[in-house]
Length: 229
Length: 225
Image (cartoon, rainbow over all chains, first blue to last red; front, side):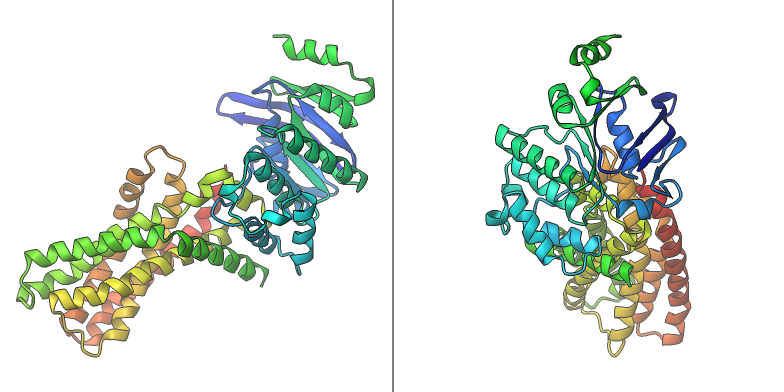
């Protein structure tokens, strides 16, 4: 379980997150919605240990993110609009490198399986810079899943993807949820969030204003709240 | 042991990328050669003043060319936000520093290995049996320089004027290392007693240790958000 305990994040006088508090259950697929600048990426960065909260803490199981960020890192996978991939390494070399960084013993079968899953096995020896945006994003997903994380954080992963790549990503996400991986995804796509996720969180001006099951969420209500000044 | 494997993985990846592009080494080497050749036109080979100025010329070539290499330390990590990908890995930030410093030391040492024979031939310098000691001085000289340079490179990587910012930060701080390296090299070029060289070498080792330890500790705070 992820327990976000009264997180506040300030950049100088600007408060990007204001007392955000919620819990995400194991194996749950949660969508985090919000307008640009609402604080979605900041929250994801904090959960990914890339930023420290100004106040509050996050607990993953019984591990405090503030006290033991290293332990958290080996349990989470992150996909963002950045791919975190080296352009001048091949797909295989990138995954091999990150497998070494995650200290994965005998990573070869895992890498081969992931490359097949994301449809990049035939291009595994090609440099990443020769890949399209969609292919790079699929490889980024493979990188994020390399160490079998039980939490997957996705920050607007559909940015720049064509229909086929987006479809493949959705398929993979559904499979991960079946495998009990906890998924927290930020998106601007309300329809996707309502159709695929089990819960909707909505951030507005750094505050968590909605936390409801998708089944009881109403698209018009969400649009109205997002549109309100 | 795990940390060694991670450090080695980063080092191996950096060497592979450099082997593939030859971007850093070529730039450093061409620049250092230009400096040495230009100074060669100024002084007559074998002239007495060469013994005095040659160590300075050698280190000017090394530190300015080294600065070019250091400024590229995080260039590949800037693309696609790879630096964040590295920070997501379960590795202590300080070990990232160790890996990057080792990479920079290897690149600059390779530069020295190429530039030194050119220097010796062009300036007609006689080293005699002091080769091992000279290589030790060259190695020690770049440990402190690369340590500070790696941290400042991380700082300047996020600034708009990174190429200008790095030397402005780096050179004033590394003066003690550069000075003791030049002095040690000068004593070796002049064929002085090894006991005299040791006096400067001890200073060099002292600054290397201080700079490496301070940078090792500071790096975690520099690389954070």
